[in-house]
Image 1 (cartoon, helix red, strand yellow):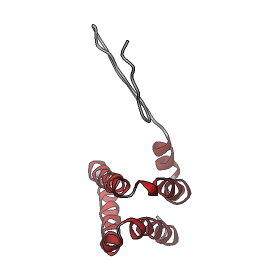
Image 2 (cartoon, rainbow, N blue to C red):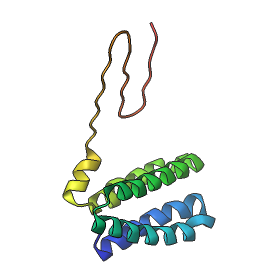
Image 3 (cartoon, one colour):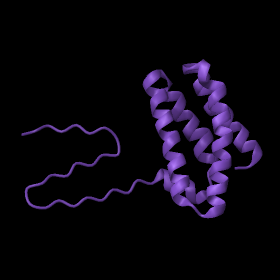
Length: 123
């Protein structure tokens, strides 16, 4: 990410933590700086697994943040839509906005897939 874009993204994410868990905000800010370098090194080495692992770690952190303060959901969505996703490269942005789901069922099995909540009523 370009420097201005990175600063804006980092500030937006840290602000979420400041609202929900202010005592952790400075630590989160330092960890974002570290992970930015880790991602840069992973990309340089062509290590997609490492990069994916780092992304998954931050997804879990954001999910835990929402569990701590569910009222942040709308603000997190705004940060994702207005700050984080637009800062991605075109190919990364397309990957984030696309959902590909595959399933195979055989015999008497059932497959349930949902990109959001799923509610199943047994008959």
